[in-house]
Image (cartoon, rainbow, N blue to C red; front, top):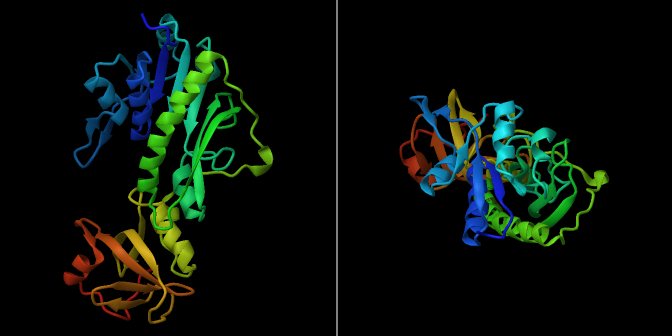
Length: 311
């Protein structure tokens, strides 16, 4: 029988899978995984399992999918396991009657350097706001979301062209290691923690559709950060006439014909668009209902011409 603490893992999104994998590889017993209910997805609205549920089924891990976390039956089920520790990664808010169950407490992995970027979309907002560094934080749960005492943090630079998707994958791997170190500290009784500095709080609310629409009157750096901070999901978009175009990747051009904001100034091999203070080169684009293309591929089948406008 393992002497390691018995862990219940709460998670839904793909971001949590490296943490589960790292714990299992290091022989920490995950007695149950708690994940979201299956939800309709795709055009057929078929019920789809969360990435964490799929992982649990593939690895024959016990699984719970409560509809309500305050449900008496769920609380009795989870208490009966006599868990030592709850590990929470990309899950919904745990109420106190749940997170106070384990004898060693409950901690969360968050994809920012708390108290910076508290909220649902820390990776997106760190890039959108032009940060050059971010990281991950583990912290003990308390009732107010993302406010608990910090256990460990790991920092990493954000690449100048890095997208939210690329940063997500890197932070998930870093987070897996930080979760393991956090569990080891708690297990050994050496997990110090410190309060968050409330004077440096910033928020990372859920991304709205309006956040995704490109404002070509902004600076090239703001537009570039917006595009990469929303790529690949939910994705920045613009309109040409009445056609919606998603832009997955772009870069800032140091040279280019200057037009008014949103004016297309190049449609040869390069798709160039004017911003307030310079030129954005679109690199990857998708017309609504069609395939994702490089800009060069897109232009071969497009009627876009210089002087046309994105709005």
